[in-house]
Image (cartoon, rainbow, N blue to C red; front, side, top):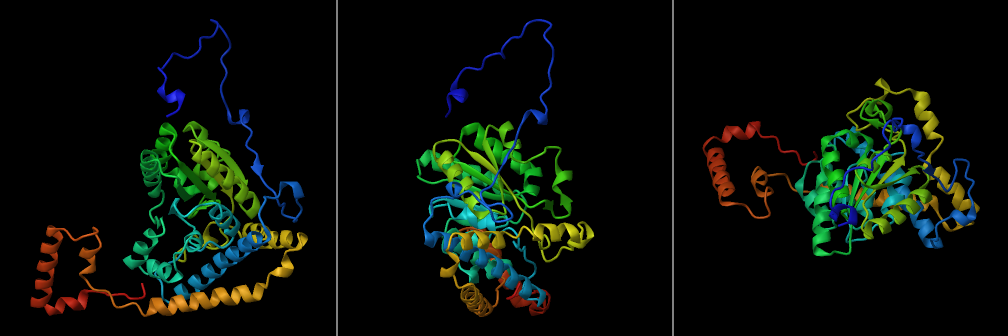
Length: 388
């Protein structure tokens, strides 16, 4: 615990009687946005992170993985093989640049970032199962220290709770939240972030400000000029980064993780944009203009990074088409495996509540099975959906 937290509370410093009063305003705070590669592809060589050639290429491959996966998932949803899906198209630099810094023992609580889970071993098959509402997908994610939160902001108190446990156990790891700008408007954000700041927990809050919480633009969610500045009120350090610049995101999160490990929680605002709808159930044309989407499309993070790779002489070692073909094949195999998943059984409503079924749940299951045996016609009203 910090000296500030352990010291005896003292009254504020006194001021001379009659001194002029002064309000603090947002103009008193300068919030720069960290950037390494500019939209036109220019950069200073000295500012580039010290990654080796293979790591630079891996960043590109994972960004492509993120984009191809989103495209394929949207396609199968349109064919009726998923209930819904939240695409990450346009946010690849923000997602991959951050995930490239984390270690296997770090816990990830994800809002909109699926590829970081692939990067640590989760399978595309399990992700497809998850989006079909099949519990085995979520169970598999836990084996890789990651979970998905669908309810906006609900993961944030958990992030701080896990971080608290890590500190008590003296674990060599951190707890990470992937959240969006909309999550910062929830009560859970206050609870989770405030707890991390009050106790100096090893927690990192990575906020992708993709400009919209479903239909609500960022500018109408808050009176603050930035999300980064909100962290200061909770006692967290903060940084604002260009979320379309994968190298800037990597550097910002890498340094933030070091800071968290040293005992100071951090909040990062990654300024990015979701080019697709909030989910496949959403119609973004109702609340945003085409010219806005086109303008952000000109800031495509993959194109910007490709420009960097070419200038560094690394592009010759990358076969773009072969990488895409490989990712497509991986997705197709995952979809085939997910389609082969056995039909659901009503007993699973009881089986997945706890690690082991409690006596009360066993009683309920027995009673329910007996009811179905006596009234077979009830099966006509039970919808079993193997494909979500």
